[in-house]
Length: 187
Image (cartoon, rainbow, N blue to C red; front, top):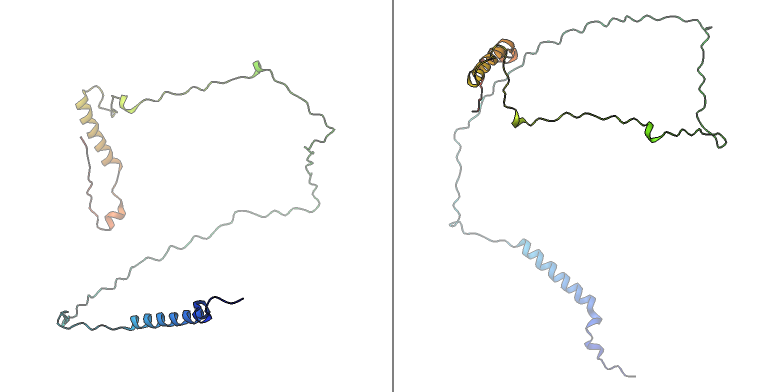
C-alpha cells in the first residue's frame, strides 16, 4: 500500500518545534514591551519646585497627670474559727432506695375521670390605649383647677421638685462645668 500524503508536507511532525519557537518569540516580545522606555518632552510638563524656607514645628507641652496613689486596702479579718472534731464520731449515712423498675414489677394505673380535672380560668386585664387617656397626671396641690391652670401648676411643681431633689454632678463642677441645664419643650 502506498502512502498518499507527502511526509515532507505533514505539519504535525514538527509541532513541538513550532510551539517552542512561538513561545520564545512571545516571551521576547513581552519582555521588550515591559522594558520599552518613552521619553516625554520637558516643555509639556511644568515642574514646580516647592521651596520650604520656614519649617513650622508645634511645641506640644508635656502634661503629666497627677494621679493620687490608690488607698491602702484594709486588712482582711477572718472571723471563722476552726473546730477540732474527734475522729470517733458516728455519722449516719443516708441510704437511697433504687427508683428503677424491672420487667416483673407492676405499675399501678391511676385513671382520672374527665369531670375530676379542675380548670382554672386566668383573668386578663384589658389594655387601655394611650390615646384614650384624657386626664393628665395631677401634682399634689394642683387639684380642682381647669386644664390650663392644672398644666401650668404641674410644670411649676415639677420644676421645684427637680431643683430640690436633683444636684449637678460634682465631677462636672470639678472639671470646670457650669450649672447650665437645657430644657426642650414641644408644644
